[in-house]
Image 1 (spheres, rainbow, N blue to C red):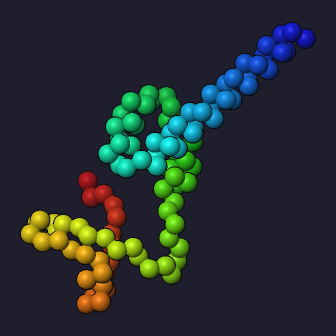
Image 2 (tube, one colour; image 1 turned 60 degrees about the vertical axis):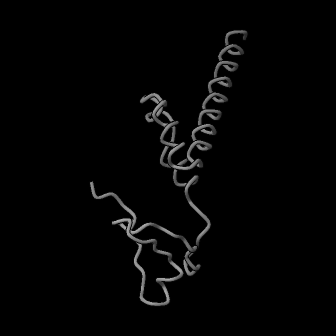
Image 3 (tube, rainbow, N blue to C red; image 1 turned 120 degrees about the vertical axis):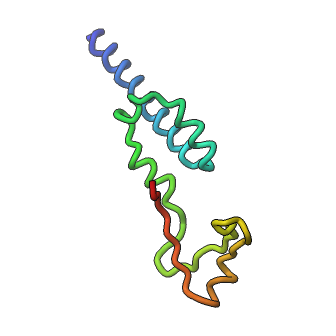
Length: 104
């Protein structure tokens, strides 16, 4: 009986550790990209095999926009840095297409 109690306590400890690690990674994913990148460089590779990164990422970065919502206004530098582009000033003039992705 004592053996099973020790096993149960160990399993509970491992479960709590797993939940704590998931919460820590989720909190890191909600940080700005620079801070998130700095945190993730310190995470050991084995964590990517054990923790549910994709599920946590999809939840942490889901956002609040829904289909039909107006896009939030933003201001970005042009690719050649010659001017600044603001969504609200471009949208009334012509349609705006936003492409998010990596071309590497």
